[in-house]
Amino acid sequence: MDAIDARGVAVTYADGTEAVRDVSLDIPEGEFFGFLGANGAGKTTTIKALVTLLRPTAGEVTVNGYDVETESRAVRESIGYMAQETSIDPELTARENVRFACEAYGVPPGDRRGRIADLLELVDLADVADKPAKDYSGGMKKRLDVATALAHDPPIVFLDEPTTGLDPKARNRLWDYFRRINDQGTTVFLTTQYLEEADQLCDRISVIRDGVIVASGSPTELKSRVGGDVLEVSLDDPTDERLARARDVVLDAGGLAGDAVATTDDGLSVTSPDARRLGTDLLVALREAGFAVTGFNVRGPTLDDVFLAITDEGLDEPNGATGEDRGTDPAEASR
Amino acid sequence: MSESTARKATGNGFLTDTWVNLKRWLIKTTRNPFVMVLSLLNPVIFLVLFTEVFGGIAGQAIGQAMGTETSYVVYLVPAIAVQTALIAATTSGIGLVEDIENGMFEKVLVSPMHRGAVFLGKSLSEVLRIVVQICIILTLGYGLFLLDGGGGAYVATGLLGALGIVVVGVVFAIWFAAFSNVVALVTRDQESTIIGVNLLQFPLLFLSSAFLPVEVLPGWVQVVAAVNPITYGVDAARALMFGRDVMTVLEVTRFGGLWNTLVPALAVLVVLDVVLGAVAVRFLNRASGAEVR
Image (cartoon, rainbow over all chains, first blue to last red; front, side, top):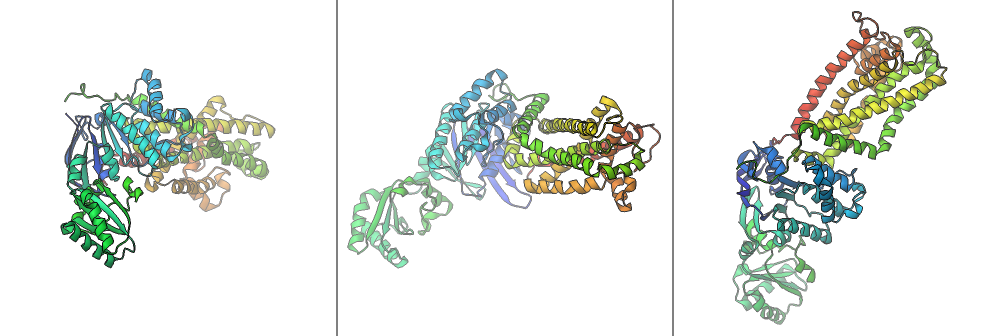
């Protein structure tokens, strides 16, 4: 049985906006599934349709074997849901928030005390458990939200952009919890616009754009669609004219096809299966042609590149910056 | 596949769901004793200042309307009890907006709890609060009454009548609580809700039988007072306070004594409760439904 099975889901809002046009998903039990897309691509609308908060305009959805429309209560009992906006009662303490969640889902009274203690331990809030949640930092509130979503030990957990707005340390901490619950057999459905996040966590990814799934596969499969490693070169005085000339130098020296070399804000980006081997030759050729190289970096393709390749037909658009403005690639920092 | 094989939580019955929600709102109420005190502040100031400052002058007008030897404290306490219920009712919508803003509304919707139990639990916590606050006002009024000389009875109908005043307060509060929830769901914004419901408070109170007998008010105010729900709430509570028919906006004579006020006044309030309650339930259903909009 699939944990989540969606067929031809469409959601059209009253104003005519087709937020989700045709989404089919088939997520086996125990999978860590990533739903990747930019803002407004339809991620949240899809997740709301899956967790019974929104009735699809068309299509069929079963979650944990139950139909979201006719068996919505059984679906609700089967899932944990963490909304994009942190959802906790700030006037209650962490312990009270988790207890409320336990009570709401009918966790047997005898199990509650231990369960609450375990969950607070899991999200590292045990030592502040009796302080009102309104005094917590953003990261702590998110962690508390995670704990409440897991209160009834649901077989399926939906996480809607769970790490948006968190600092890297808090984000890594959440990733650890998510991996841990997935290791314990929980199916996880995660939406994200952080491509690195999907790469780090997910077994399988679907990319959504304008309400339609445009690509699906394992992170490795998706990466292979980009066409090799990426050499990024920064140049001194990167005017358009100089960059165009530098691009010609590189194309010539590497014997590369035109779409392998793109100009970026401050230099070039070379995508090729041979990027690592060619690197030195290209840098030398640039210097001999009178260009001062101020930085370079060879990296494997990230999902940023995949995302661009799929959603912007990015390989035909040499001006696409490879994820620079998103800042999600750790290799960026080394340049 | 059959229900028994899929792992899932069990959920609760309707009563347990109600209790779980009631408990959350009660914790929130006690967590913020300041709010409880603050919301009593206006009624208490009105009670003390009005009786002490206007007591002498108002006494004449009231003497005309109610007969001699009437303490303004006794006259005013039922009005303050209704004012307390009115203010408490406004917080119902404010609580709902808070829940929408901090995500708890959606969190509860995605849980298996019964929708009706969710709102019933919250409403019961508000009823409890109104009961406590009216009891405080009645006690405070008794203190002022003793200070005033304490001639005659404080609540003519005794303890049962005092209990009746609390019930009147609750019956009165329902329509306004429903109204504040509708405002909350329309605006979905805390400040708008607070302003929206509070703006109404003073005009409603002053254009009614709350502070002076309707007969001594100007003609147009009398017209407004006759259709103002506050008048019916205050008259019902006041009838219990004095143990006789005090209503002047409706002349009802078939029930005898204080029932001539109580029956029509409560009837008006109950109709109002049902109508506004139905509107609020419609809005709540819309807000908590999964229909795409």
